[in-house]
Image 1: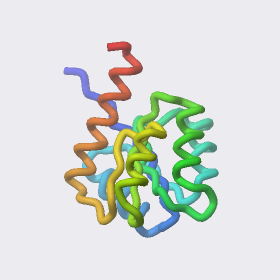
Image 2 (image 1 turned 135 degrees about the vertical axis):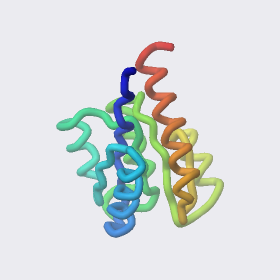
Image 3 (image 1 turned 90 degrees about the vertical axis):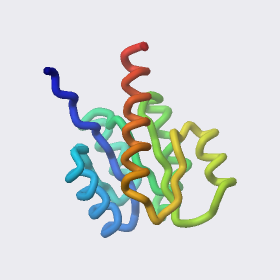
Image 4 (image 1 turned 60 degrees about the vertical axis):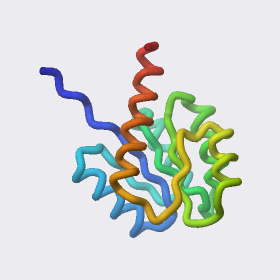
Length: 133
């Protein structure tokens, strides 16, 4: 039996405690997680370690707006699936995120079971796209 490779998830949020805790919770559930607290680290990691399957991306960050990070991720590698997270705003931002190429838009506080479903769906979509199926 071939074991599936763990889904690689890059978590980006300027709230360090939140992103580290969420990364740990997902790691304990079998995901390969990397937490970062600034947008610049996203691009450095993608270039040095290869593309993650899924990026969990905060919409509001002080160094770069999440929508700008989303656009740059999609320019670098359109196959990376991005799930936008926010504790602010509402549906108009969600519509903008989806139009910008986000896989999903989720409001904080996050239900971990719902998030796991969305991560699995996003990773499956990415893998289908990469395999050409």
